Image 1 (cartoon, rainbow, N blue to C red):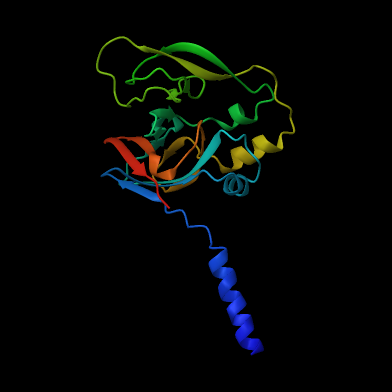
Image 2 (cartoon, rainbow, N blue to C red):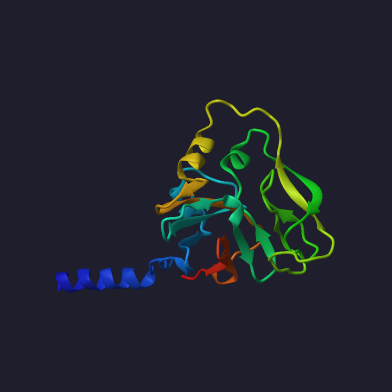
Amino acid sequence: MGRLLVVSLAFLTATAWPQKKQIEPGFASSDEVDVTATMHIDRAEITQLVGAELEKHIYVVEVKVRPKGEKPLRINLDDFVILKTDDGQRSTPFAPSQIASAGGLTLKSERIGGWAHQGNGPVWGGVGSRMPGQLPGNGGSIGSQTGGSDATGVQAQSKTTAEPKDNPLLAALKAKVLLEKETTETVSGLLYFPLEGKLKLKNLSLLYKAPGGKMEIVFQR
């Protein structure tokens, strides 16, 4: 009787508190490269993965890139874009210094060239040459711009405030980020994307500008 009671309690516990579904990685392949990616939107998962707590609008994608052939593949963070299909929001990854900067981030309006842009929402992207990503507006698309005038958007820019020498968050982000380099070997790392609003995996995809053309990776649990 005692043994039966223990088994029954274990069964009830397992059924009452089901385990969280495993995140399935997305995959895309071309003649030049294989890309595997896992999107993390749960705050506890992100903190555990990074080793530090990030602001609530920063989400993380685990990426593994496997070049094919003997020709080196150039890994650029600019080549990755998160697309939120339900509202057209787009974003390129932030560099670790942009997230951990003592001065934080400011927004500035500027012209957006080289990529198609639709919708009236604000945009997020890296500083310098990083392509901005669109936040909630009237939707939009992404692709090479073939003509017409450049769109105007708002781009995130780090303040010039000096960073402290001892910055644990910056160290954690740098230790895990996908490194920009040329390689013929498989590389992996994290991408840090700014996104706003409620996120569902079914509405998210990762776009990658591969040498042979753009690739899309979809996510699901």
